[in-house]
Image 1 (tube, rainbow, N blue to C red):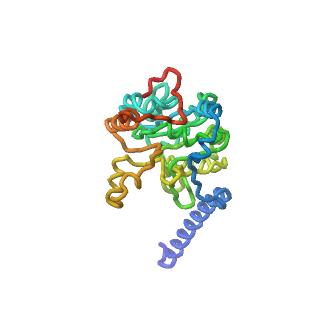
Image 2 (image 1 turned 120 degrees about the vertical axis):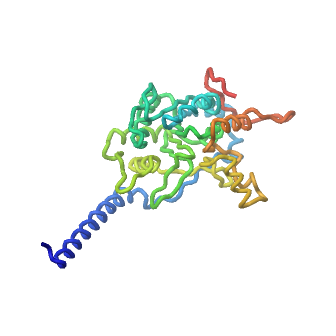
Image 3 (image 1 turned 180 degrees about the vertical axis):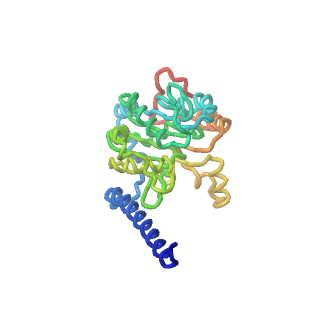
Length: 317
C-alpha cells in the first residue's frame, strides 16, 4: 500500500512529466514556424491605382485580361450538392472553369473520405486540381457552396499581379502567431503557390495534420502548410481599406452597420469592389445574381475601360 507522502510524490512526478511534454511539443511548434513569421507584418493587397490603371495601353489591357484564368473550386459536404444546380446557373458561369468537390460520396470529382477529416479532403482536392488543371489556369479560387463571388472583381484585383509569384489571399484572421485566410471568405492561390503546395503535399511530414491537442480547422492547417513554402496570407482590400472578401451575406453586413453606423449604411459596410459574400441560400444567390449582373438603369451607358471576356462557349450573364 502506498503512503500519503508516496502518493504525493508520484502525483508530482506525473504532473511534472506532463508539463515537460507539453512545453516540449509547443516549443517545437514555435521553433518550426517562428523563423518564418518573426519579421512578418500584416499584408494588405489592394487593386490597381485608378490613375495608373488608365495609363495602361489598350494592347496591354487585352493581353492581361486574357492571361487571367481563374479555376473555381467549390468545396463542400454531401448535403451541399443541392446547391450545385443554382451555382451552375449563377456566378460560377463567370469562372473560366468551375467544379464541385464533395467529401463523403463517390463521383468523378468527389472523394470518398471520412466526413470529419476536411483537411485531408482539402489536400487531396488541391493535389487533384493541380495535377489535372495546373497547366491551364494561373489562379485557383476555393469557395464554399454558400458563397457568392463576383469573378470580374477578383480578376480586377489580380490584374497587375504576377501569378508566378506566391500569392495566397482573401479575408485574413490572426490566431495567436498564425495569420490565415478564412474559408468563409474564399481562398485564392496563384499557380506558384499551387506548385509549392503540391511539392509539400508529396511530403506528408511537412503537410500532415498539425493538430497537437485540439483540432485545427482546415484553413488554419493550409496556412501552416503554406508557411513551410514561404507563402504568407494577404488580406485583400479596396483602395479605401474595406474588405473585399466578406465572410457574411450582404444583408447581414448592412443590418450590422445600420445598428452601429446608421448614417453610412452601405458606404461603411461594403466595398463597391466586393468579391465575395457568404452564408447565402440558393434563393438568395439568385437574388444576388439579379442585382449584380442583370439589373440595369435605363439610359445609363456602361463604358468600362476593362472587360473580361467570358470563356469560350460560356452562357454567362
